[in-house]
Image 1 (cartoon, rainbow, N blue to C red):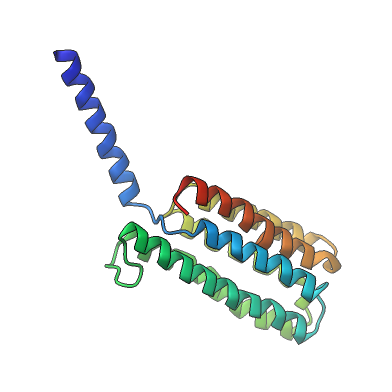
Image 2: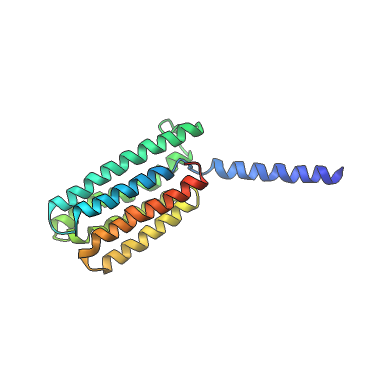
Length: 196
């Protein structure tokens, strides 16, 4: 009898630990949305061609960024609704709010640096900038999420560093590898392990 009580107590403690762990994580990161974002980025890399100093190249990728943000917001909202969590009415200190506060600043830095790179003749180096800063956003925001998200962020950061040292004419393929391939691979992992 004592052994059964002890086993039950251990089970209860493990359940409480798991509940507390998940309560502190932002789990609405969209797996299938990440896959869709990846497919969009691969198509954009084909359409854009190699990075150059043209505004057309930047505009094509900025249009894809708008598509990706839309996919992310819709799929995050859908995943959160299925879990009974609201993304839009979050109290201070909730995992969703902490995720956003850590995720958004590197993206804002990316917007500022895009204008600087474009205005100073460095537009061909934007792939490194975008991959590095998006990776930073995923790594910092991912600290409030499931473990696979910051790992994805580090992979984006490494690819960004590679893009800065690689020939500029392959930048669009590095963008396809990151925003396409990494989103698809990690999106599938998130969808399979963390509920879509």
